[in-house]
Length: 281
Image (spheres, helix red, strand yellow):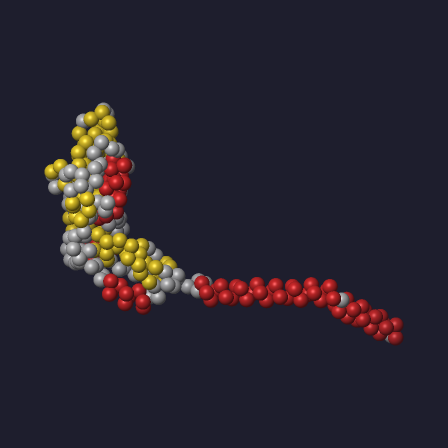
């Protein structure tokens, strides 16, 4: 029994000497500090970044900047004006588009970038896009705040080569002042072949998204047909395509420069199964 107590005392003394050794004490102290710093950093980051906390971006289209300020402040977000356009279908001073889009999840104090409808039409000078490729013409027009409007294809050896630039059916010269946001009609060469393009799916897209998509396919967008749910200017901006003619069935092909008819609504119940509608109705 005495030997057992002696052995225990001896082990205890050895452990005490081991932990009291300055190297061991330094290692243990450093390890403890690292653990505290690590967990402290995690806690601070969690608080700083509001870990797991996200806010849904509200729909700001059609609202004035004063209304935007009030709404975003209540949602713990901020806004920044990135651009302005002049659209006749939207009231002056109202939001035309936003980034991120409505429904997007963001952190607190995130900036929402807005494009506002100007109170008066801003004018820009018409650039020259004749004798260049369609891609270059589109880039040049957009850099001036202009859009590609109706595209007409005529026989010419060079495909997608701009032959004329028109505004409201008449040729427009370089340097002519024109309202920013206007659509410029282009007369393009269609090449030597009788080329056709697939019909893209426009369902669910807004007017601006549909127009941009059709431009990529060298097609035109007819005047949209709005249903009875589209009442205000905000509705016009938020309306989406729920029917198109011809439909995009994977086999439909159109001549370059052809037009597509679209029907638009803000009725969310029209989104499901709309691709099965009869286009001949």
